[in-house]
Length: 120
Length: 275
Image (cartoon, rainbow over all chains, first blue to last red; front, side):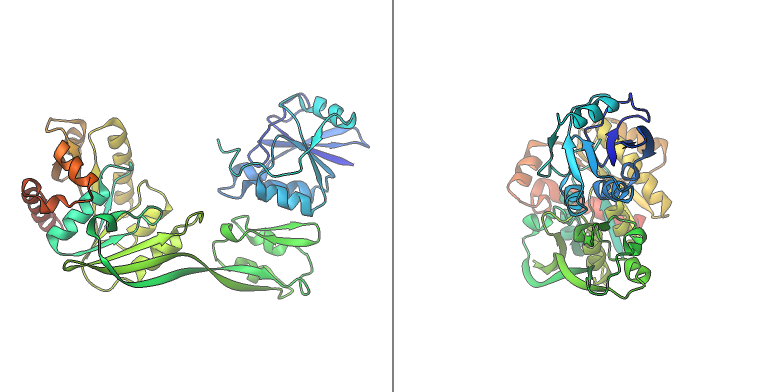
């Protein structure tokens, strides 16, 4: 199973970014390999529809789970339709968020947050 | 001839200057600040014509769609996305460019229209008035501005522009021959004025400046005009009376204390643009 975490940096010690569409990086954790892979978020450079670009990217990575802060309405719609479960977490080191998820310590995001929440 | 009134900074007095100059010059007034058109509050024209502005967006025939995702990849505006067994369309992000249909190999795409705003026109005293209105919640103003300016009859117009130097202003500038930049003597006013100056220079549009809320002193905007040899058409004084008339929706050019000022500015503008 693959897990995508919105992050402020490129390694597992980096903090989770509570913004989904406008986070700088996604760290993809492969539970079988036990490894993290970093990728630049396409959404961060898009003029509009950042959440859509970011959601499309993680959907293409075939992740089953997303750990982030909030999801905007557009990203939420896509992720729900793609059958991906999203969980909310505070800005902790990425490896800690995965541990918390695995211990079932995170709550599922069941509704979209405000649009443009992540605008800098 | 079309003359744009722009400013950089918002709230400097574009609408005050353009409505009063249009009345003074006896030329048409066009409000293309479609996100918040307020010129008609002052001119109060009787509306004779209303028309919707439409844009097209794609709909996907699920029976024909093979879920290849080519349309979503072709879209530069993130208006299409593949999620699970569906291509999701975000119609408000669609720029109506047609790329998705070209990319679709399964012929599953067609377009439908939706209204994003309207155009209104009418007469106030003896001048023609036109405006575009963007519907609340719509993010894209350019199609409304473009339709408004493209379909104007051949006559002289003062074009009241949106603030800033964004696509909305750039779109309006494509239809004008000259520009009047309205600013105020404040750091913010001057900063954004410089951006507006850069923009009109980029398009080789002849321009001059009007200072609103002028303190009568040798202020920073006047220093800028002198240093850069920019034509100053005139000033609107910083006065309680002007503010009071404005707040009641009244025209300065119809007031005895301000009428002459607008006639003088109108003369200078006509001379500068050989109009």
